[in-house]
Image (cartoon, rainbow, N blue to C red; front, side):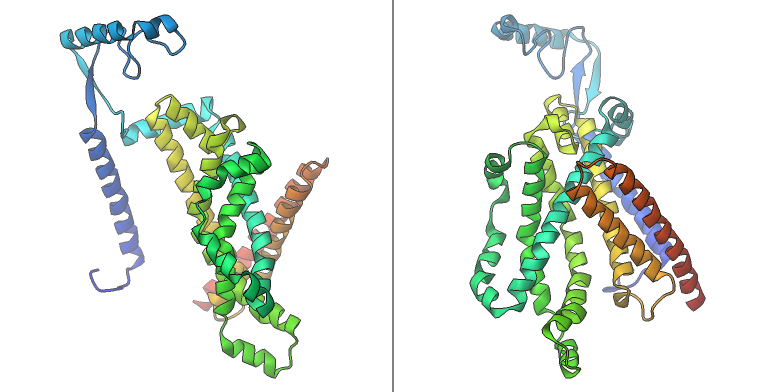
Length: 368
């Protein structure tokens, strides 16, 4: 297990994965205990604000010093104390906070809203990056004109531009989606151009020998080669996309979303709830990453399998149908019956995927 770039068996990966989680939880628990503090158990003492002091009372604000002095006396005379965790909560506190988040704060609804905004940002970014990236990457005219400005996009301070996006789009969903899409474009557009440069010369020489036209070369060589690798780059941007969507949701907490929920919990100093929401974002990001891996394997099986597997076409049709439904939901969201049509189409797509996956797994078992 200490060999450089050595391989682990399935059982070793399972055991070491469990040990890793236990180690992280132990470190988390130790940090929570190390940063905890004790407060007196006395009537009228508040750990977040001085006792009896409310933000809406001018009279209490004037009497702040006397209130603090009274609390100090209570603290000095207290005989019983309890431990609190104001900086890092215990894992058990975080786990227990989910019931309240689901029941009182609509955690599921806010998560779905953030996921929808995230996917819309991805959609517009990919829709813009692919055609522009191919134009700049393939044709010397456009490369000479725009390659330097595209490279310069990497150095934009995106969070500093959020004020500009507020002026352009307001503080509602249009701004959030535009800001997220732009944040992805900044990284994805230069990557598309780089992936075009990475296409191996042997494939280009082959299609040239066969007499392929420019359009045929783009369709049969450049597009499959670039898109199969671009999915890996999109996976890497998952963390970036969630960072920007959370920042955008901070601007308008009334719009909902996980970022707005974190903002509210921060104002209320409900640290366990904040950690619980962060763990939800991590889980969503992990699942999103796995979905991109699955899509890459099924749309471009030549990168993962040596032969064409039975059932892969049905899975591809299902994925294409889901992408089509998603596109229609964005462009025609306000039309009547769109939701019903999208639901029926999504169910049909899932039937295709499940049916194809059953055939594909059977083909894999027959090969092993």
